[in-house]
Image 1 (cartoon, helix red, strand yellow):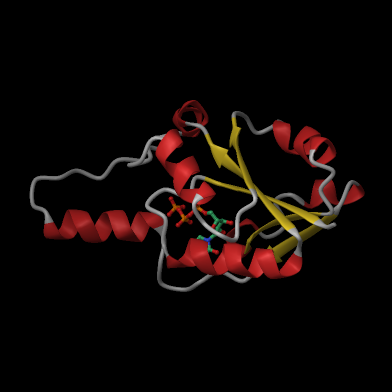
Image 2: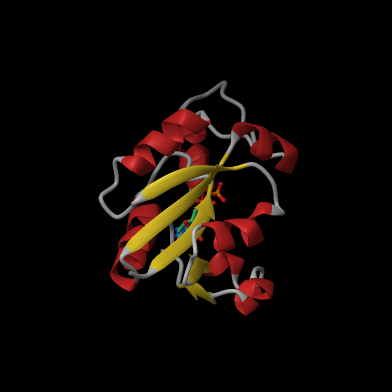
Length: 137
Ligand code: CTP
């Protein structure tokens, strides 16, 4: 049984998220997702459109995902890898190199990014079409 651990906000769940999670599911028996809590996002200066419970439940409804839990701070990844007995820590390529320090505990991999889509780009497109709205986070 192999376990892969990944993290993200997964706000406005989009095709880049689906493609990444489907590739993770091909790499491991279990894909566990740490979804950033609203409090953690606030700490990072990030504002999600969807609250944590919605983002987490959408992830739970995705067939590539086995388990979802809340990420509350930058420091918990190391203890999560140990707690979940993860074989792999995996992120999209926009995080390349950022979590290499976990490689003493498990394999650390970065998969190529889906070009042309992101939560930020989706928010910009909505704003562009809706005069009067302001960009947040
Ligand atoms: N991701 C991806 N391809 C994309 C967008 C995101 O593979 N086009 C990956 C990220 O690398 C990350 C995971 O999806 O491992 C969750 O990313 P998240 O930050 O929630 O999504 P983004 O669309 O990148 O959000 P934002 O624009 O707010 O940074």
